[in-house]
Length: 358
Image 1 (cartoon, rainbow, N blue to C red):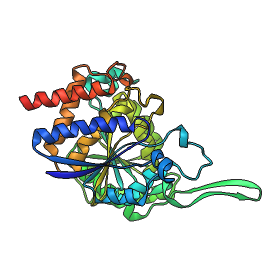
Image 2 (image 1 turned 120 degrees about the vertical axis):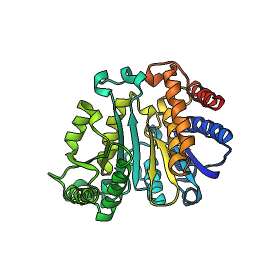
Image 3 (image 1 turned 90 degrees about the vertical axis):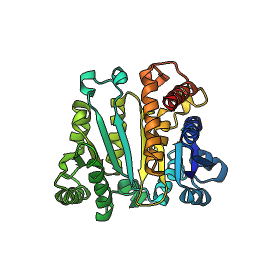
Image 4 (image 1 turned 90 degrees about the horizontal axis):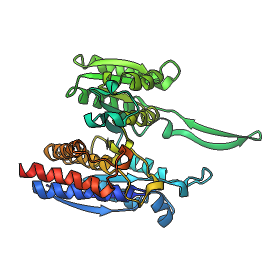
């Protein structure tokens, strides 16, 4: 396998964690006989500083031509002025649109040795294995009209929550397809008691379920889902929802695993390269201090191997090495330990090497 991977380290701790993930990818390539080449580009705040925009057309074209894209994190206080018209997050939204990645997959699993890292009681965490699928290119973040204006001397802000039937259908199709290889249960989260877009979502979810009688479907209001994620998280299998609800619920679900630093994500479309990134932010307060947890990015690299490069054995090797490193006691600061960013990666690499020797 020869593959070209575009790296978008971004801002804050992004460059640190992406560099660690590349080390693991290189180790996998050497172990399994692959050749990965990397093209590093600017995106986010660093691109604003250099080019005046968060994502240039040239960088987007490079990403579109790649086999996969690995992203670190974007944003930080330097670019947080709400009055500014250019923000790092615009690059992320533009990248998702430009790549046509409409489904964000966020697996949430609880490592048995990390149950005490979560604020939940350990008995709540047994058997937690959730795949959250978030619609990524529609809804409130992209709907039009959008903007601020002065009307009769008052300032008004408008965002439009808009969905087309095909946008909902394709992400639900993916949810049911992935549920078939898991525990065969889909929970569709909406706000159908209030929102017209959610009533359309629920209608399409029901019709999709009718075509998949082997998959159980639950409809759940988003407020109920936010409660159930804490009170009975093991009851969920595949949870699928619209863009903003998914953004919020996946951050909530991160507390189940013990830290946002552990969780990866994959953003996929029907064709072209996937986009892979940890779910955490840029954490500028710890940037450059060697405190960042690289495991979310390393596990995102595993998803890259599985979904974009069709290398499931190599992906499983990384995931097993991460699990073994945690079982052996590797703990970064966010997990209550003292292992540095590089030490966490070294622990993963050691277990990759141990697997190879076996």
